[in-house]
Image (cartoon, rainbow, N blue to C red):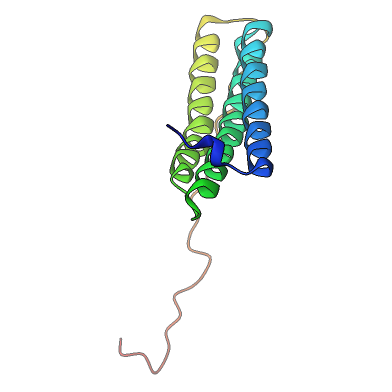
Length: 137
């Protein structure tokens, strides 16, 4: 069905290693999600597990299909790009939403919001208008 038996031993070993590493990182991220206490601690473990774990699995998949088809197969790069771009953005949005919520509810231990920027004083233009003799105006 999948022609996996046609895969050379060196490639099969490398693909298996990458899959085990990816699955292990995913498991560690999941355990971190369960084990860590606060939301802010729990955010990091699944994010890193997802990014690195999925990356290892996708590299293994690319190697598997490249060796079997005797040509470079890079379809998984699109999945990798989406994962690498969307995971940190999602993490940032979740962290900001939780921080906003915790500040509104007055949760203890949450850092206060940064002070607003100092107002900029309006001054006259420090550079005088320079008139050049050769200019058309």
